[in-house]
Each structure stands twice: as C-alpha cells, then as structure tokens.
Length: 630
Image (cartoon, rainbow, N blue to C red; front, side, top):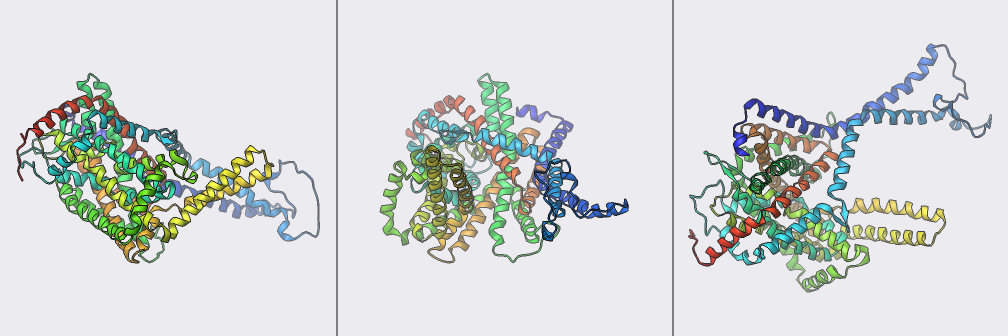
C-alpha cells in the first residue's frame, strides 16, 4: 500500500486532497449554516407582515374591520357568532400571527433541506453504531467481546506482563540505536494525552450519578480486559510499520489492516477497511479530538471572564481564546511526533500527578469512609437499587463509561505507539497495555472515589439523583396506570409530568459541575485547580489527536500534503471555540467509534501472529536474553 502511495503523481494526490477539503469544509460550515438559515426566514415574514397593508392601500382596497385572513378563507367555520361589544383584543385581525407562523415554517423547511438531510443521516448512523442489544450499545459489545477474546487468547498477558511493562517504561531496555522517533515512555504519554480528557472528569461523574457506586466496579473490570486489546493493536502497529529514509514512521491500524489481511489473502478487504479506518480517524481528529475540546475549554474559561456583546455573532473572548489555543497547539504539532512526544512526556505526568494528588488529599481527609465505600462498590455492583436500572442497568453504565474513556480496541493509540524506538513489537505492546490501567483504574477511580466520599455534601449530585428518582417514580406510576387501564386523562397527565421530569433530569446531569462541587466541598479554591487540570487534559488531547489524524491523512494522500492538514486542524480549533457545531460533533464522535469495527476484525484475524510472537518474546525474556541499558 505504501509503495503505491509513494508512486502517486502530484496531480492525483492534490485531486484527492481537494475532495477531502470539500468534505471537511462542508462539515465545518454545516451546523453554523443551520443557525444562520433561520434569520432570513424570520426576516421575510416580518417584511410580509409590514408590506401587506401598504399593498392593499396601493390597490385602493379597504380592509373590512372583520376581515378574515387569507390563509383561513378556505376553512369552514364551526359557527359564526357576531358580538358588537367584544374587546379589541378579540378581533379576528389578531389571527395574523398564525399566518406568519405557517409561512415561517414553510420557509425554514425549504432553507434547511441540506442540513436536515445531514441530520437524518447522522441520526441513522448513530442509531446503527449505538443500537442497543440487551441495553448495551452495539459498538460497546464489539469492543468488550474483542477485549475478552484477546485476553484469553494471549494467556492473560495483562497480568503476567504487568511488572515487565513497568521495567520497559522506566527505560531498562531502551536501545538508543533502535529505529523509531520517540521512546517507550514518550509513546505512552502521547497515547495517554489523547485518552485522558474530559471523560475522566465529567463522564465518570455522570456514570456514578446514574449508576451509583456499583458502576465503578464494572468500569474497573472492563479496563482490565481493555489492557489486552491495547497490547494486541499496538504490537500489530509495530509489526507492519514503515520507516522512511529520514526516519519518519508510518504506522497504525490502517497499515496493519491492509498489509496484515493481504498476507491472509484478503487484500481487497484489507485495503477497503484500512482506507475506511483512515477516513474515520481524520473525522474523529477534527471533531472529538479538536473542536469539542476547544469548545469545552472555553466554556470552562468563560465563567472567569466578564460578559460581552457579540461582534457579528461571535464572542470576542471566544475568538481570542481560539486564536491563542491554535497558536500554542501549533507550536507543538508543527514539529511532528518528536515534538509531540517531548511535550506530552512533560505535560501528562504533571497533569496526572496534579489531579491524582488533589484527589488523594480529599480521600485522606475522608479516610474513615473508605472501608464502607469499598463494600458499597462491590455490593452495589451485583445488588443495585431499582432506580439505577438493576444489575443490567449498572453494568451498561459502568462498562460503557470505561470503553468510551480508555478507547481500548478503537486503534487510535496504536498510531502513537508505532513510532516508538524498538526492534521488538511485543515490547511496545507491553508498554501500551498500561494505558487503560492509568486512564481508568487510576484516574477514573480517583474521580469516582472523590464524588462518592463527598456525596453527603455535594448538592449538585443530590439534585441530579433527586431528578433521577423523580423520573423513576413517574415511570413506575405510568406503567401501573397503563396496566390498570386508568382514564386517558390520568395517563396523559403522567406522560406530561414524565416528559418534564426527563428534561429536568437531563439539565441537572452536568458531570463537570458534579466533580467541581465534589472537589469544592473540601476547599473552596479546589475548583480553580480542577479547571487548570481540565484545560491541560483538553490541550494534550488536541495535540495527540492531531497526530492521529495526520497519519490517516498521510496514508490516504501521502506525506507531501501534511502541512495542508495541519493548517486545517489549527483553523478547526478557532471554529470550535466560537461556533455551536451540534450535529457536526455528533458525526465526529460516531466516526471515532466506527474505527472499532475494522480494528477489531483485523485484530481477531491477526491474533494468531501476535500470539506466536508473544510466546517467542516471553521465552527469551524468561531466559534473560534481553540486553539491559539501565
């Protein structure tokens, strides 16, 4: 595949670049265009309302006092009652707004047909990817089953090789003469900077609020299996990577999918799935790995800056923030993976230590509650309250949160680990499997522990759970009323109350606010420290995801157009800071999870090769044949 890419003509490469530019450009402007499309419609209606009397006068027509609007002429009135002494407000002329409303709806529908079509497509795609099977989203089932399969196939290497992986990360086997661009440690921090983000703070808080303490147990359990999924995909990335004469590394799922399946006589399928993965990783990089992070980062900063009047519909502070963020991200990503690895090797340990250190202080201040908390986590995992959806409901919440957090099986981390300096692919897999442990078992567990320990003093969490209880109570009451065939008015009333309760529950399910309140319950200034950590999480995520998308771009179009991708990525940061992108970000998130399908398929088909290489590596390791450098 790479040989073919290297022989492409410049015109062909630029032609394909142009096609993708058009595609990305359409995604970037689609949602803002949706917002702007409503204004002309309303304006047209206002013009019609103002011009109608004038046009009547020009024609010399007099408008009767009891005239019926044109839109209602064809309607057959139920009864005609004439009252001379009725108030002015009740005159038929006041029905004009109904006409305006109809016209507005008609114009909007015509103006937004393209955006509406895109929304329908994204909705269909989302329902397919996250289609519930026994309550579990389809993509979660694929990732979980894949992780469990890999764990048994590799003989629980996540346990056997844990201590050895720590030795590798410490640099014990780092040979400076090995081919690659970054060290084992830098590869790990680069991948961690992409996975450790807002989900570890906001996502975990919502999971605990919805599923209670039991969700934490299932979250940790699935992270254990996810470690092996990371091991397999990152080992494969090292096996089928390509290194150019200048030392630049090309690796990741798109390469081992296409080349690995070709060796299995599935070349056509491999090329298709590899290209599919590359397209999805580019889309994910621009959305979830870029614009979403920029948008959420500014929302965090916005509460500390004064209110201002938008200029041409844009918040000046948001624009300034976006430009500044684009500059500091650009300083890193324009230097490639070597500069990214160098930066993340400093940022990630600092932000993880800062966050975990803060959490440990809070945990130690509530040390007396820890034994009871541990018992509650285990008991609630198997015997949760009905409000949390029972055993299955808690499992779905906990497992889904772990999968979305550590991205094990998605294949994104394999891109960063493919650039590591090593001549032993299995060794890099050993390093990679520590990622889910740090992301989920350490950081997510710290977040959950702080929230659960401070729950009695967390009014934000209590408000969410109170709203959740209200939804549950109304659901039970509605089901009972329907079963007993109560009067239609009673059932309609319960449905109305339930609809309102669900909206109230959704408005109070604010993960970041719950975590901030948990930290703030101990020290009032802790939320400020948390804001700094969240910004670092978002910043490091953008840096690493830029590289993931860049490798997908290079796979499709070659390395010659990388600078075009980087400039687009930086522009997207500014756009994400100032625009409400809505459905575009939903589409991007879906593309990230679409990566799981080709990655898991290839991983299962190539698992025999990984197992063979693992057995050979482990035998040599136990015999002490590896040279040590530290």
